[in-house]
Amino acid sequence: MIKNVIPHASALTGWRKSSYSNSESGSCVEIVDGYKAGVPVRDSKDPNGPALLFPAPAWSAFLAEVKAGHFTV
Image (cartoon, rainbow, N blue to C red; front, side, top):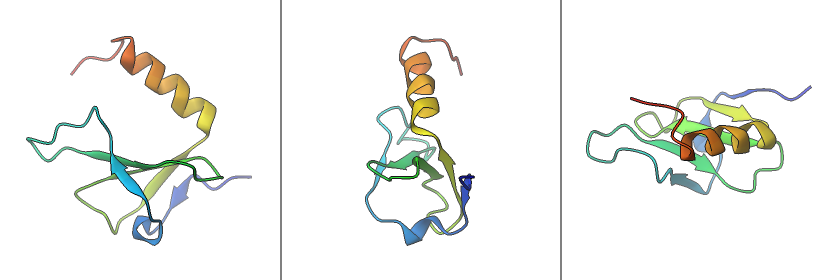
């Protein structure tokens, strides 16, 4: 079973901000590419806090829905 939370996201390196994040309001989502166990996702306002770990296929499906415009603010 894969753990779906990484308690201390700062333990990982290679974080990058999502191109869909709103940098003006400080609402940023960061991910790590190439992590073997899945796709870690964290809130950039809390870099030492937890990160959620998504299975890569689920993350890809989510991104496809975002890019298709199926989510609104």
